[in-house]
Length: 166
Image (cartoon, rainbow, N blue to C red; front, side, top):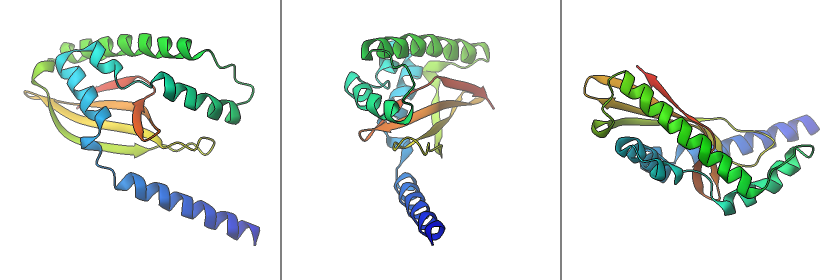
């Protein structure tokens, strides 16, 4: 009986999560538009806008401590500085890689956006990867936001982005 109850709860949670994700139009969310425009304009400052804010990091810390009690969590300022440094370095690498394949960043076009859910049972936060399918002249490529979290109703980039030529 307990297994049936647990299974039922799991299915209800899955369906609620799937329904909320399936209804979101990822092409028109702020994180997609901001990343796309930051790449198009080659703007590091613009790209930093998709990172978690101080309030969002403070919101996440108790969740991380609850799920990983032995984890040593650095200060909020150290976390934010680390995110910013890695994001700028990552954006530069993605930009350079694209240029090496002939991508003209100022001429890119957003063709399609998709989302691949990657829930973590230990964290009650929606997360996954957002894939931007883009083109520049005759080049087609993907920009993958490998780890995005929905923190307090706002999608934030929590890891590096990836460039893949199609």
